[in-house]
Length: 483
Image (cartoon, rainbow, N blue to C red; front, side, top):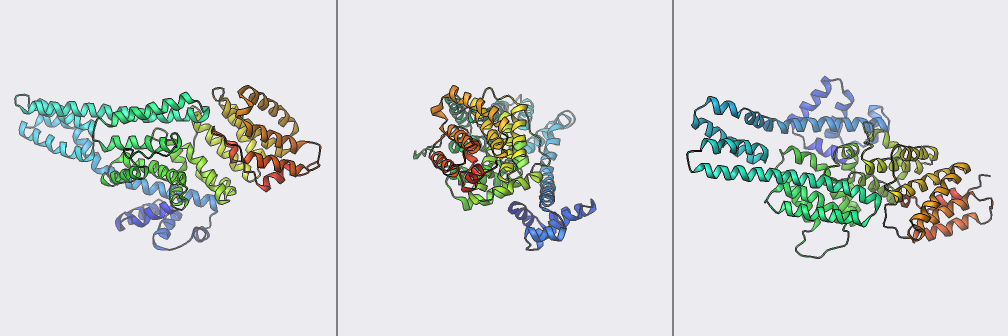
């Protein structure tokens, strides 16, 4: 909510009026009212919902569509001058073949300056290609040839950085689900390679791409604190990126990457437990959850936000609120089955959202669909975690047959992978078996002792079972008499 209000209040009077008129002309009266209320009135969300006569889900949808409408308008305004320049580049041949040489050179020199301002390196290679040809009989030919070669090399470096970035987050997904040290080594090598590519040029674009990787890597892979004075502090990196975004406000790539660095800043403050500062960034990212998950996997690891969100809601005691807002947040969301880490994370998030409001049958359905729609043979640890969560739903539903079938499969996996490495799974199994046992004597106390033991177990692997809180409510649910 904070993000949308801030954007609306920062609109110029002309931009605000244009957007408002556009909404009214398209009969989007409620969106127009919401726009005006956020700009001119100090009203709470509940007051606005009452005025509009909508429920929470409809309000989330309305707010999301208004945000999208504003962003489309702002992007269109930003793209206008860029589009004009790109049209000029596309028409260079007309200039070369129809204008006098002096006019052609002057036109290209003007384009050169504009393209440098916009940091359009690909288009600059076209300009330098013609400038070196037009100066073929002068010493300037060498200078423009050098510029041409430089920008071709720079263009290739930027492409390489983008490829490294995408490859890093693909491999991070594998590392998250597998926990293999070899996958971690691969990530470390990619960080070094990105550093080498970025060092080739004094380029703000390469710095931004490197920062996407560096910040995430230090928060989630190499988490040990470093006091090396030569290593740039994460806060300094985030500040510098924001400064770059401000200096190149008309750059469309940076416009879209703002959400990535809002997400990374959120994770930075969470990492250091500065929750007060993290809260404003959470609101901004949460509004764009669906967009972040679908469109930014080449620049960061969006599924991490879902687990951050669960942890945040558990910390604040608001875990029951997630299920209600999911309908609006994921209204247009489509998950790609080929992106296994995203698929797993999304289905786990939806299942846990159901679990927190005691919709155990719905939670089980999400987990069953997850296990049926993709293969997790490459990720046995993750598969075991998911099966354990599913077994818990069957336990709470008192479905003895399905529980017994599944628990035997889980225990076989624990034995194969090494019982000593999965103590938390073994304890959870004991808790569930105690819950379903015929003996009613001291059931609560037995489960409580196991819960206390589980709290002391450390686990560095991907473990969504850690989101099952060992609370008194949970222990009572397991020990309740259903017979």
